[in-house]
Image (cartoon, rainbow, N blue to C red; front, side, top):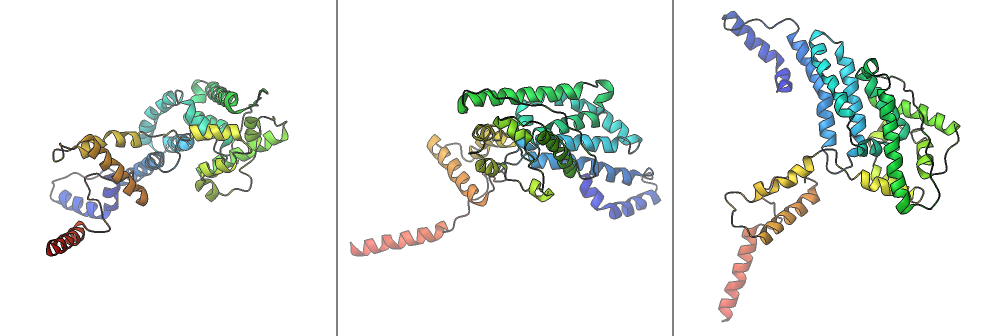
Length: 336
């Protein structure tokens, strides 16, 4: 609504001036339109995160941490914009309360992103706490969060190691990572990963899969477009001979959806199919309707946008099929 209003700024201003001249409205406060523009810019990061994490055709769990970092950095940038945003951003600091309870699947899935890796997760956790002002309240909060992440990652790896690994004991090295600030959020993250990966490579790299993965520098030579266009499932499929245990981990962790959009869509199917006009569908017919519509939507990749109330486009119209069938019946009658 705000975006549509802001796009018609001049029209609204002219109409409002007419109302003011008729003494039917008061003047806008100074800077009102500037604040609307700032507010749209502030909300844009939430829109971007919601859109990206609601996708159904690509893994989303590995991007949750980065989007939370973008939100925290956005809050930090707007906190000192003016008095209005100081009152808006300050309540947002309870964001950290929810971040403390973030499921480990999202931080561990981020570590399986080669362009984030373990070093990037540590850097992003530190930046999120710093951006939200947690250091002033609890200086050890980010350290505890990083330790919790490393512990969860090691426990998950040990579980998969028992299933897919050998009898040798794995080791895992933890190391803090400083980051370099930059205007571009994605470049800022990549710089942090590069710096930490270089330090890990100078140290003794463990022989376990997790140690070799965390010590590898996948960011060196990568461009921003490489990071944005990463097909993480294809990447891990190509690495399954080198990292069989981590490939199995990635297969399971990356399949977790960050948003409830897909599941809510499934649960709402009944209301869209078994409507008042179609209350006598048998279970078999209902199953066929769902499977047929889903099959047709897969071809056009619109499973996340399809509406079961829409008509199903057919390559051969039913009318033509009926005409053909009626013609055949006539021939049979003539022969009789």
